[in-house]
Image 1: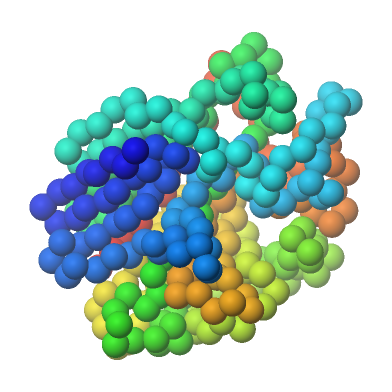
Image 2: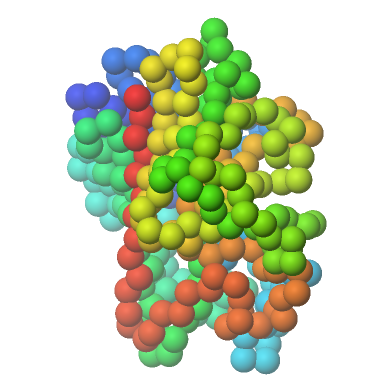
Length: 291
């Protein structure tokens, strides 16, 4: 089922499957900012990544001597959430652990995703609760895809990514879907990044992020843009399909990251993994501003 929230200026559509943002429009400009999930290119809009971000080495991980399998980005994006609150301009969804989820992820949890429209954008709120009496390990991330170009008269290469603050960040390259720490370099995010499809020939661009960050997609040929802002996310991925040339770019704040090429497979040692005490709650949020 789809849930619609709106203000005088904005309208968003949210799917109960995956608690996924499926549409975000400015009413005054009639521009759709979210990729409409054409399966010929990529079948998703803005999936929630949980309980892992990225890929596992050999598709498996171990915890307390037992081996488990999880697909890339985990299972939350493919599960039906419960709508727990809806207002005119906001909605919240909940996913709880089940006997089925514990077969692949042996933790008791409650994941709540909240969406609130206001001003020129949408705030997305993540809350993870450990509902067990022992610690849990998890990662969580966002994967919103934005239509590029935003206007039919423009092209993909008319746009650029504008990082703020303008400073260099550690770039973490991927090798067969895993982080290759030996090849990490200083990424030139102290200036704008011109968009072209070749940029993604080696998969996503991944950077370490600390403190307040924003990544905007802009063009000099139009005032319309989209900005993703966040504070408490350790990494960001910038991605589009390659060699298929799709009309979208993802800006992805992550608390967690793919396994490294040197990963031991032990979940407690995983790069970027979060440890949550019994009955404790983890909370973070990010914002999408559309002009």
